[in-house]
View 1: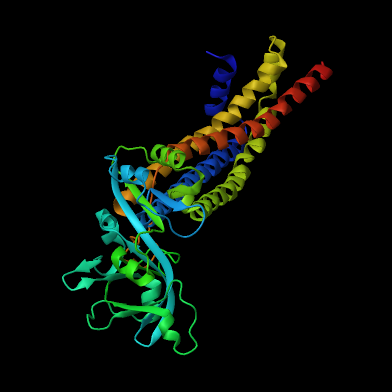
View 2: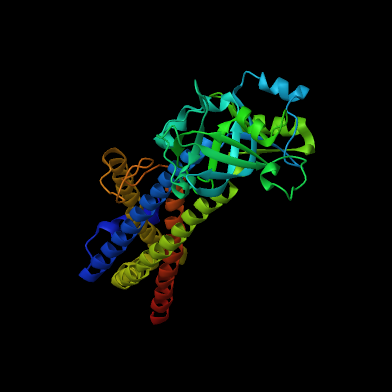
Amino acid sequence: MNTAFYIARRYLFAKKSTNAINIISAISVLGVFVGSTALIIILSVFNGFEEVVLKMFNTITPQIIIMPSQGKTFNPNTVYLKELQADKSIFSYTEVLSENALIWYNNKQSPALVKGVSSDFLKNKSLDTIMIEGNFVLENKNGPNAVIGSALQAYLGVNSSDPFEKLQIYSPKKGVKASSINPMDDFTVLSIPPSGVFEVQQDFDNLIIVPISFARELLGEDKNVSAIEINVNDGVDAELLKNKIAQNLGSTFTVKNRIQQNQGLYNVLGSEKWMVYIILTFILIIAIFNIIGSLTMLVIDKLKDISILNSLGAGKKLIKRIFLVEGMMITLTGCIFGLLIGFVFCLLQQRFGWVKMGESNLLVSNAYPIAFKWKDFVLVFITVSIFSFIASALASNLSVKKIDQLNQDL
């Protein structure tokens, strides 16, 4: 067995002549234990929030989107796009035609983005999970219907259960010069009943989703589309398909995955998590550096042992390594138990949801969400190991100084 490890282990469990050494060591272990537990719990909670938020966004956001690099629309009836539509690896291929318009309802008006979608859009079975009122129905026996965002519904006071009150949508006519006689002649005005209200996030909640046939009539667009949204079958690598599509379409089109479509959201979620990690790591560092006091007192307590080891031929490196290993053992013991208790607490929170956020809503449970990532456990362990090594190395230097003093005295 390694000599330094063997002696350090004996010192860890051996009774010290001064009880304060045991107390300071226990405080060091407790500080690292609490810090490690708090860090892994907080990181797991952020993972949970990230999963919940991205799950809601991914309900509306496709895995792959194709848009023109220049201009607003393009012709989807090209040979390659038709072949792509028939690709068996693709679960849904949705043609989208969207444009800003003015929405009028019950003497109130608001600008909104009108998004016309083809029938494949409804293959997404998760759409019902974001509905807070009514159903996600775009067409029935009475004709087309609209599903609107919660922000638009709240501002206009839309009642989706009222079949008689319809949304009035105003869109400027294409290629028509402004008329000074009757300005309304410059607009296409269509009515459509609301069938439901969805809620995701502010960027999406000012949106009105309609059948693409309705959008074509409203916008005066016969064949062009604004985008093509693609979702792939289970087991298909969406990133690989995205790169293949981008290569085949060339620079005239922009092809994005989910991360690129919501880059700002991913950046915010990532930066918040890292900021919390940095703040808690500073607190953890303070707890880890308590080990300096503990090891300093231990060196003083073991001066007789150091003298004997030195006289038996133990070099400075060995004695320094003994106290370095001792410090690492103290802090890593707290870290390992902290990670274990943090893991158990997160498992219990996942199962029972003991810790609540407050009022629940239709989209998110009122219990704090938890999600595990093995990289977080590795990150916490490495963080503790690095700063534990630094603190232990600083304290173990004292043992070398004591050897020099002993040699001078002799």
